[in-house]
Length: 416
Image 1 (tube, one colour):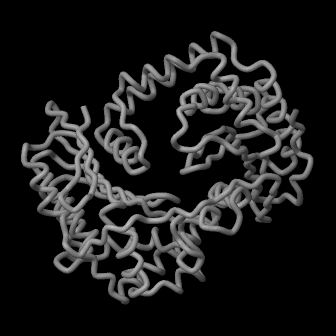
Image 2 (cartoon, helix red, strand yellow):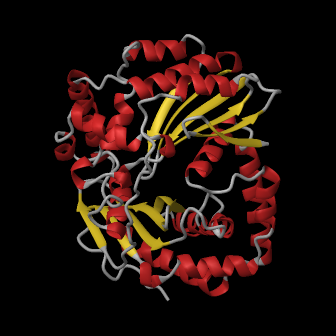
Image 3 (spheres, rainbow, N blue to C red):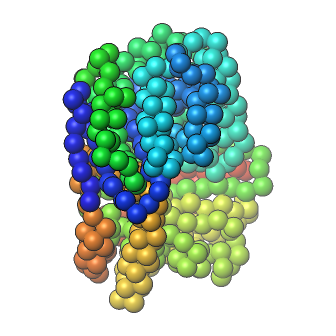
């Protein structure tokens, strides 16, 4: 049972007490990611995430790590296009320390120029690492193909050029206007004492925190764009992307059922009918990426350059068949059971529960119980699946991205 409340400064809180556990997961969610950045700020959100681990007014970087390591806990963070999350997992008796460290990082980071210069080099090495990985490059390219040169289409890490334009002053000003009380959610799942709200007031109510809302830039999906990055590598990494549903659309349950059959795992049609039957790929799968007001359904494959045309023919065939025939009753039944099983198993983790609740509250989605989720999956039927297949496999929304030894992706797909 989740409880939703607000601190005295307006920060939203969602917590779920599980008193038979001895652990607790805490996440501080900020509605700020690369989609919130102007062009000259590209990479700022991810850079801030790094800098919050570099030291505060009372802890240096080593002390931040030591304070959590010394109690057997875990601390980490991640940045996406629409939000950033800082999180810990500790024994329940150490929640005070976890909240102290997280709030100290977020409200008291020093952001000194020396640390900024060092961490900029670290992120540049991270960019270099991703530039060596074609599967990472193609994932960014398909986003750029769909959304263009705007905040949605630009890379989360930023570029080397944009990173060198970020100073300590510029970062501090950005934090003041984006890390606001209306833009922060605290999510907690696990065991904790009755003084939880008092602890949150103690650590997260800071007089200097602004309360303005933060704008997420509108980004329209564009179709018919193909992007290629020539790269000397053994395989071609290719993604065919389609416009899909946004993060608030309840049709996601039908989409997940459909994709369990189509491209979601080793028993899915793409894997069985392309890798297992023909041996032409090592990796082939499909996935859904949902955002505020928009979304993508992507089909990814990695193959030798000489096999690109044949693999795309096979993918086209699978798309055309499922659009024509949809799912059988048995496929529908099995896919629903698989989805329910995956959900229940993931829900046994306090980290997963914390993330689901925090993300939903931040994105203004309903926080629903496991029974309600299972009920929504049970209500998926052949009609709802047929509708979502037609929505997300619309040939008119196709974009293609490829990385490797390939000159053109024109006319690779024959879709009906």
